[in-house]
Amino acid sequence: SQQGEEDPQALSIQEGENATMNCSYKTSINNLQWYRQNSGRGLVHLILIRSNEREKHSGRLRVTLDTSKKSSSLLITASRAADTASYFCATARNSGGSNYKLTFGKGTLLTVNP
Amino acid sequence: DAGITQSPRHKVTETGTPVTLRCHQTENHRYMYWYRQDPGHGLRLIHYSYGVKDTDKGEVSDGYSVSRSKTEDFLLTLESATSSQTSVYFCAIKGGQQETQYFGPGTRLLVL
Image (cartoon, rainbow over all chains, first blue to last red; front, side, top):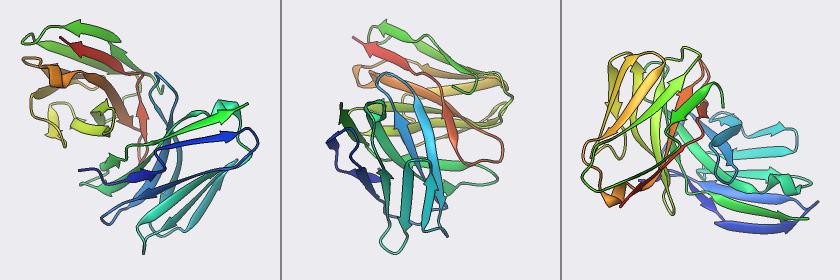
C-alpha cells in the first residue's frame, strides 16, 4: 500500500511562479524525502526532512513537515522551465540496522510553461 | 547516477520466458534495491539486499527473485515473465550512513 499520496496529481504554471505540492502519509516515519524524476530518467534526491524538523530550505526549495497532520509540502520558488518533472514524496522508516525502507507516493507532474 | 548502471536498458520478451535484469554499482555500497514503476502506482519495492547473499522481500515480490553474489551486482530475475510485469524497473543504492537513495537510469521491460 502506498504510504505517501501527493496532491495535486498534475500542476501547470508559468515560469517565475511558485509551485506547491503536498504529500500526506499514514504511519509514523523517521524522515520524509522528496525526489524529482525527469521524463525517461531515474529519480534524483532533492531534500530530506527529519521527523523532528518542521521546515527545511535548499536553494529554491522549501519543505515543511507537520507530523500531527501527517503531511508535508514542497515549495519551488521562481520556477523555471527546467523544473518541469514529476515530483515524488517518500516516507522513510527504519527496518533494522542502517536500512531505511522508502515508500513512494504516486507523484505530482509539474509543467512549467516558458 | 551515482555510479549505477542497469542492463539492458530496454527489453521486449514473450510471456513465459525468463528474464534477468542487472544492476551494477562501482562504489561498494552495502544496500541495493529493485523497484518497479507503473502509471498510477508510483514506485514499489520488489526486493532489496543488505549484503552479499543477503536479500529480503519488498512490497511486490511475487514472481521475482534476486541474487547478489558480488557487492557490485544485484540481479533481478523474472522466472516466467507475465504481461503484468511489463514495467520500468529501477535499481537504487543507499549511500553510506545517509538515508537517501540513488537511482539508476531504469530498464524498460515489455512482456508480450
